[in-house]
Amino acid sequence: MPTQDELKQQAANRAVEFVESGMVVGLGSGSTSNFAVQRIAERINSGELENIVGIPSSARTAELATELGIPLVSFDEHQQIDITIDGADEVDPDLNLIKGGGGALLREKVVAQASRQNIIIVDGSKLSARLGTNWSLPVEVIPFAAKTEACFLEALGAAVSIRSRDEGGYFNTDQNNLILDADFGPLSDPVKLAAQLNARAGIVEHGLFLELASDVIVAESNGIQHLKRNET
Image 1 (cartoon, rainbow, N blue to C red):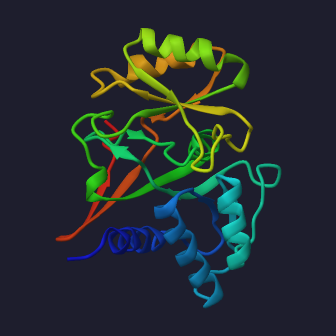
Image 2: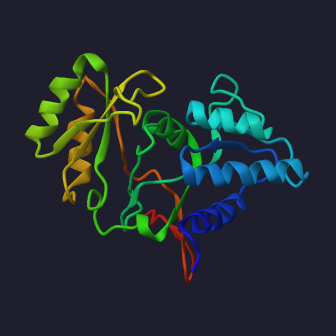
């Protein structure tokens, strides 16, 4: 029986097969995405991939990519990304996602929206009949508005906590914002909730990634599934 890390590695390896020489690649954040970053670096260093540049979705990913020798650029040089490989905390049957467990949801969504193809890599434990069943919704807020936005989320029915660091103090994002983890339970209407959150000035971004994943690669003990979004 493969371990969870082995499944993540299998999903990452499959996704990286879609990367071709000359591409601008969005580099996701988190433990699963790290496997993809490592595999891309291996293919570059072996000469299998040439003229690859990456746009990282977090400072931590940028550090890893630099250590591994992946050339990095910003949106100043390239405004369009050919392919992004990233993970997710929860995936529903329509390939909608909850992301942000690592706190990089703002940059991850910017990268996803700038990408022609978004491949999400997960193990089978991340599949869910409804978003919110197994994961709270991360909501990034400006510090000035943390309390009022927490009250707003509670009024919508969520149990809310401000994310903290293991070593103490609040978790700060790469943009020095705070994360509110909002537990709504299973979401009956994620589209409506996303619209409500988008309308709040103090909310910078939220972890509902709706209609952004083009592909989801799921690694399970009995093999790999490649799910594609129905565009109809």
